Image 1 (cartoon, one colour):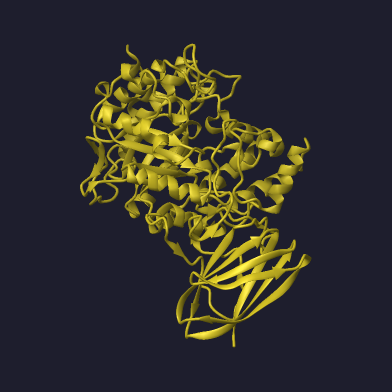
Image 2 (cartoon, one colour; image 1 turned 180 degrees about the vertical axis):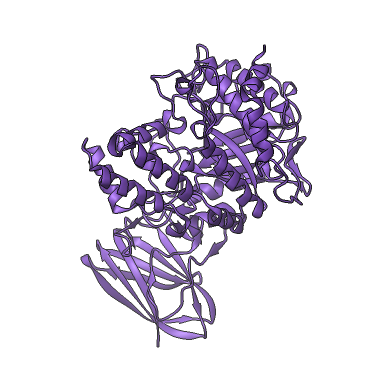
Length: 587
């Protein structure tokens, strides 16, 4: 019996019956746009070429240590976090937490917002443990026990997406056994065999994709199968442990082909997405497994993080598109500044490459929904980092509050990130961060939306790793916004800080009538000099500021602003100045 028949026998009639009874199997919503499909080097629907603008669900179904903020306590993977909770507060409370986590982290309001902003697809990051048991936990070795939680959540997601006419592309982020040494992103456990070390894990992955195909293949908003997210495993005798430099990736290509053939026995219509080794970017030996071995409905993917946004950085992928006559999809990027985001998306779209961003929400500034970490969860993390424990009741309270902080209504929308991702066609364009009028205090952290050099000027506005892979911080305070402007201070008292010579900030201010104003602003810090420009003309050439540890009010008299939209720039001539707020006072 070959492996595909073996897997299909394991699924049995129960799988088919479940699929037939599930609303996910039927035509749950009309799709006037048509299914996604491949035509030459284009991804198409019934309207013509379709450029995927997607976002990944992050730690909704697979908790990565950096998003859970637990790496300082030595907890990096999904399973390590769950095991820790079971130890600290018991299995019953852990189950209750995870149900709340699944319900809180992603809901229809999130999808409605993404559609309104301009995203046209969503890439849910899946962990196989929400769908089936690990091989070592199966009651009968070699068989598959199916878990309802993951399927139920995908059913909901498909319905939410359908209501918004968005495609859903399944991303196998945590494959059975884990697909890479970078364990945090795929839940690999070095004490257990990986996906590449045990045939049983491959069989389980294959069975899961068959199960998903049977359940969702007829859903008109299903966008396809991203088979294995970011494989990073040393195959053969070359390359590093993450598969970078590996010369022979045949085992990976064999597995892709195996999964493809099994899916195609059930689903001949939906796209299959292939990923290279080294986090999706090493396609060595792919020429020995040409796309002719697959079918026309196949897309080549790659990921892009922390490198330059120039043509050279993606030309290898563009060359593959030409060589194999298949579309490209940049299926994951993110974790950088707005400047990097805007430059990257401009690069992709100018090369006719769709994209998917990562992730949708977490407790940082560089995602579309910002989560505020509750104090109780911070205290829990601090306790764990010291090697101590809170009571089971305190632990449960902390993680439940952290879960509820992810609910749509409790998050903060990052308008600056959205602007960088979806409104970046004109690199010189700027827009008011919020409506600024006269006779009101305007916070210096509410400078205009736009790129470095147009909305602001800062010495460091993105993270491009050096040869040693060193991280760079673009916003020194890591607060409030995701641009190069450095912001300090506690919540509610943010101010611009760490200023340097030559840096400047622009503000769009709306004036009802032509008027003369006085300008008052609050500054502190080192002794410095500023200039002020109004509508690109020098208003004040040299305004000297005294050294002070307290906020000092400075006043500039008799500034003329015409009716309508005005742009005011504050430029640092000599640095070390902190800036809090300014006001235009009607004379």
